[in-house]
Length: 305
Ligand SMILES: NC(=O)c1ccc[n+]([C@@H]2O[C@H](COP(=O)([O-])OP(=O)(O)OC[C@H]3O[C@@H](n4cnc5c(N)ncnc54)[C@H](OP(=O)(O)O)[C@@H]3O)[C@@H](O)[C@H]2O)c1
Image (tube, rainbow, N blue to C red; front, top):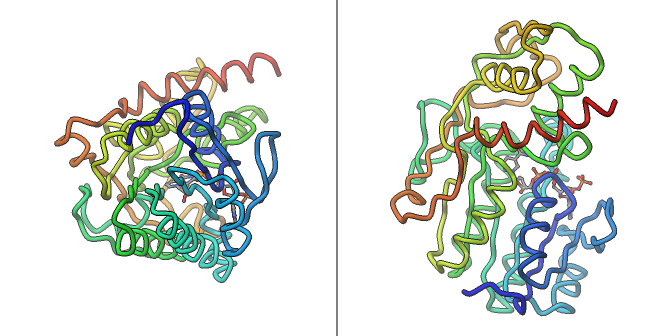
């Protein structure tokens, strides 16, 4: 489908890390209605993906030509402790939106996660079989299965370790490290036994837009190029912040954090964009290039504090 200034795009769960980037990319090019349950910015309207009836009303009022579902509970420990809510949000929410997309006859975009693999192999391509370990991964995978079995016109994009949103919105690794640095910590303890592929929200948003335009429906790994451990990401970030001489980074194993991060995580969730590459539609940069760009937001914050 051609996406232009007259195309109506509905985005659910748009108030988070990825939502900022997707809204910013799409709203410049299309007519967007963005919703979430957390109304943290003025362009968001309220809609809860768990509630079929009100979701359908919110979408029908707008009559979109494309629906993007970003809504999820993304904190793995929260999901373990709140399993019912995770299933309702991540799985039933995706089902609800798929049913509405089907009724309206419009394509749907669903964001899945690299975390649906079990980590038994080193790298996963788009065709490798998922085997989700924890509640977050299981509920996200159910959403993926439902969308792809139920709809003809769908895109499932599997993302890796998300980077985006900056010091205020980023809920994940980069900001967790940054907040420790900002609070004056001089030694960071970082795991080196978890491997993955960082995924920059701004490149990911552009990727969604460009791939949707191709009409090549299906499931896609969409992560930054290259792969790494959490330790390597932390070393790179500290270097980009110009703090390599001031901060010591100590490698630890996942056991070190087993109380705090108790949800099961695969040892490797490295993805490769085999299908995007084969079709010549891989718009993702190398993770180091993406982190260089992203670190500017943290540099600015650090200098102003
Ligand atoms: N973060 C990652 O590392 C990562 C990796 C791979 C895939 N993904 C996927 O990428 C998508 C976007 O995630 P993100 O990284 O932007 O996470 P995020 O910052 O947590 O954004 C998700 C948004 O969905 C909202 N939400 C939660 N329950 C909802 C409901 N019932 N109805 C409507 N909205 C609801 C959240 O609100 P609250 O803040 O109130 O919960 C939040 O604003 C998700 O599908 C996620 O599973 C994320």
